[in-house]
Length: 223
Image (tube, rainbow, N blue to C red):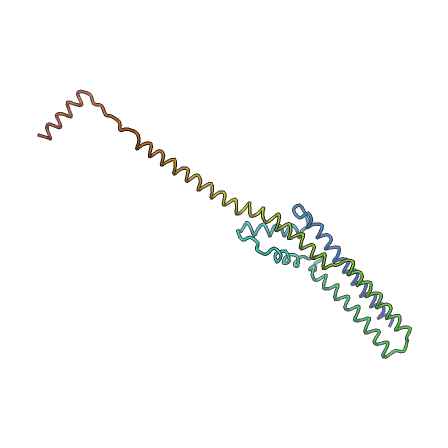
C-alpha cells in the first residue's frame, strides 16, 4: 500500500507542476498582449499578421472575440495546445482525488489497519487541499479572461481603426479626389466653351484685288 501512497503523491505533484506551467504561460502571454504592437511573442505576431491580412483582402473581422479564441486555442507550448494543458491539469487532480478515495475505501473495507487508513486520509486531504489552494491563488480562468480582454482591446480599439483607415478610407479618399478633379475639369471645359461663344466673330478684310475677283465671280454666277 505504500506504493499506492507514493503514486497519489506523484499524481498530486504532477498536477501541481502542470498548473504552475499553465500559469507561467498565461503570465507571459498577458505581458506580451500588454505591449502587443511591438511584442516579439510568436502568438501576438501571428494574430497581428492574420488580422492585417483579413483587411488587406477587403474581408475585415466582424467578431474579434471568436477570431482571438480560434488562434489562442491553436497556440502550442512544448508541442501541446494551451487548452489541453489546462484540461490535463484538471484530469490529474481528478486522478489524484479518485486514487486517494479508492485507497481509503480499500483500507476501510478489506484492511483493519486504522493507522494506515489515517495516513492515506491525511495524505489525500493534504495533497488535494494544496492543489485547490493553488487553483485559488493562480486563478487560471481569470488569467485567460484577462488575456482575451488585453488582445481584444488592442485589436478592436487600436489596430482595427488603423487598418480601416489605411484600407477602406484610403480608397474612399482616392475616389473623392478623382471625382473632385473630374468635376473641376468639367467646369473648366465649360468655362472655356462659354468664353469661345462670347468672343466676337473675326472680321475678314480683303485687298482690292481680292474684292475685284469676288465681284467677277458673283457677276458670273448671279447673271
